[in-house]
Structure formats: C-alpha cells, structure tokens
Amino acid sequence: MNSIEIQTVRTTREKRIFLTFPWRIYHDDPLWVPPLIPERAKAIDPQRGSFFKRGEADFFVAWRDGEPVGTICAAEDPPTNAKRGKQECVFGFFEYIDDQEVAGTLVQRVIHWAKDRGLNALFGPFNLDYEDSYGVLLEGRDRPPALLCGHSPSYYQHFMDEFGFQPARGDNLAFEIDPSAPGLPRLTRLAEKLRVRGRISVRGSDLTQFDAEVDRVHYLLNTSLAHLPDHIGWHRDAVEATLSQFRAIADPELVLFAEVSGEPVGWLAGIPNLNEAIIRANGLRRPWDYLKLWWFMRRQPECLALKSVVVLPEYWNRGVAVVLFDEMARRAMAKGYKWADLSLTSADNPNTPILAEHMGAKIYKRYRVYRLHI
Image 1 (cartoon, rainbow, N blue to C red):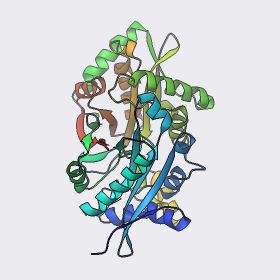
Image 2 (spheres, helix red, strand yellow):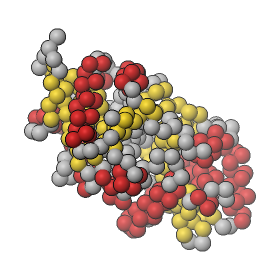
Image 3 (cartoon, one colour):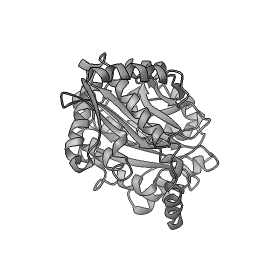
Image 4 (cartoon, helix red, strand yellow):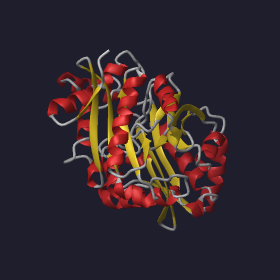
C-alpha cells in the first residue's frame, strides 16, 4: 500500500477537492445533509470568512494512490484562547474514509501545525464556526440533522477514542418537542399565571434595527452562558455573521426577546429547519441544484429549529424561559409547524435540559466535542 501524503490546500482546484470530499463519505447515506458549497467556500476564504477577522487557519487533504482519502482543518483563535486562558488549536472539516491510518496521519499533521505555533491541545471538531457541525455524532442516526447540526459515521467516534481524544465537556443534546408533548399544557398554565403578573413581556425581533438586535443577542449570549464549564464565548462578528445568514428567511415573529421593564432579559430564536430543503439540493454543486432548492424552499417546513434559548442569570428562576417557550409554541403551531428541534444544549447546562424534560421533550441526538493534549 502506498504511503499517505498530506497536501496543504492552496489552489482553486485544491479548494474544490477539499470542499467536495464529503460526497465520497456520505454519497450512500440518505440522512446526510450536503453542505452548501458557496457557503462553505466563503467560510474557508481568508478574504471573506468571518473567522479570519480574528484567527488563522490552514486546510489539508490526505492523498493515497492518487485519490483524496481525507480532509482536516487546523486553526488558531487568539482572542478566544486569551479569553479562556488556553493555548488550543481548533480542528474541523475532519472527514476521512474508514481507515485509522488516514485519520491518524491527518491528526498528526494538525499536531505538527499546532506545535509550530506554541499550542498545546487540539479542540473540536468545529468547522471554524463553533456552532457549525458541532462535534461527532454519538446517537441519533435514524433521521437527518436539523439546521447547523452535524452528521458523521459511527467509526468517527471509534477513532477519537482509540487515538486518545477525551471529551472536552458534557455531551451536547438535541431534543424534539411536538404539540402532543405531555408537559406543554402544564407549561401553558404556568405561563398564564406569569402573564397575569405582567412583569415579563415578549416581542418579536425588529429587523429594521438589525445592528441593535445583534448587540442585544451578543450581550445575552455571553452573559447568560458564562457559567458553563469550558465556555467559549461569542465574538460579535461571529454573532452578526450567524444571524445575517438567516436574516432573509427568518420569521421575525419567531425570533423572540423577553423583556422586563423594557430591557432584554432573554432570547429564543426559532428558524425554519431549512435542512428539509437543503438535503435535496446536492450542496448547490450544479446550476440545476439552485432550482431544486428554490422549489423545496417554497414548502412549509415541518420542523422549527430552536437554536438558542438564553436567560440572564438573575432571571433564571423567575419564569422567563417558561413564558418564552409558551409564546414560541403558540406562534409556531399557529404557523403550521408540526414539531420543534431544540439544539444544541450541553448536558453541563442544568437549566435547558431540565426545562425541556418538564415539557416532555425527548433527546433524539447526542454529540461530543473532544480535546487532545499534545
């Protein structure tokens, strides 16, 4: 067997090979949602990708016998490392054939990259954006992932364990909630009592004041989640980039702010689960794929993806999350959604999983992020 060669991505052709490699892994997997090539190309472009405003990254392809057999990315995020007191190398875009040698060679290349920069651990996988394709899928291969969630073969977890990677934090969970969930009537009754008191109000987002709304979300995210172990924290440019990509398709009535005395104290974002259409668009690799995506985007999605619920710590036990979820359930059902995905929430965060369980939500996917000390 010929040796494995690792090539750094430089040319347009090499970028195309890097971006389209996942089709070699998942072409027979009906649950895989192909990434949109134009969006991925933007993310890895130093001139356009939001990550490159604060960090650097290199991208690698593994070759054997003249064929690509794996990909990986190595990245350094100095502001996040400084904030967390870490010296870590983020890795992602980690895809490979079912071959331990290929995967190990890719990881060794990233270790070499990290050591050259004085870094002492690998952390991931993330595709540069800490919220994109988060972690390795452990459980839940019976349906496609919801928006921003990843999908991976079972042998990925086996390799991570065999190579010596350790869980970086508690597993991240995806919950499903539908109108028949047994806890929803109880949630509604409690929300009604809280509404009578009149302290908590809920409003949709105002996209005409987009920058101001981004500022509010940025503040709520970082303040509300700072208690989590290994909290990464959000950079404002990353918040803006994430929200901007959904600005054209988001329903402002389903991106909710909770306020007390006119000040934001909580946020719950509901986004149509575009993966129901994207799964049919083949990553927009061909001109006719755009027509297919347009056609399926015209349909009402069955699932509403609830990507984040945050409440300021001083309001955790004051019913803010209850009112937000009840208002979201009312609005979503009125608009024809049949179920909601709540993802991803860490098992280390005691509040969201407990609330989800009280509503009768069920865990349907589980992901894990890893760390390897070098």
